[in-house]
Length: 220
Image (tube, rainbow, N blue to C red; front, side):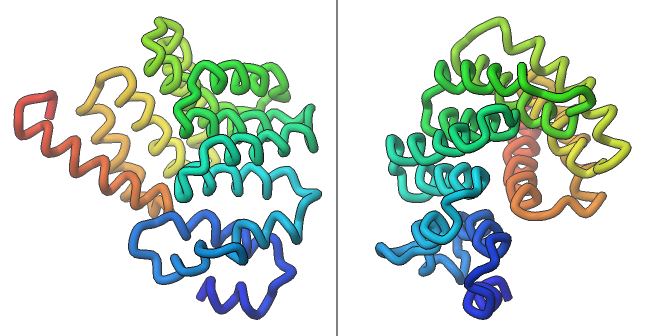
């Protein structure tokens, strides 16, 4: 369906963004669109260079799928240049840096975005707090704990608008806190509330791992 829409509506930016979200999924029938110089990522950058979100998504795909670490980070940084006062532009770039293993840089960028958050910006703040917590944890920094607490607090607000995603992010925070049982419960709740892909596929894999560890006596 998405591949057909891509061919029918070549000037629709949302279709390109949607493709870049689902193409990294293993065994995707649309995976051939990622190959070659004319791949959908490069085409998206050529068609919509004025949109900061296009650079952020392209950077993530370059890092995750193509393993083009330096270029992916450089591409996502372009989004912050297009929208330097937008918190989400910094959050998305920080996420790409974290995926690239550049956690110290990621923390700096994510915290810069945090300082730009508008009042009541918890919809953006919850994922950003998760990413900060995860990067601080990799760096073995005690600062991770305050970000897990920020996630738990933000999820209370987010639950009013999107309970499935609130439970998804809460599950990630509880994993960071070492609460495997709580994480399982949050993830199972997210699935029961029609959590959408690609987050749904991620949660299904995580639950298999958590349940496996539970059977071995790791907090099941």
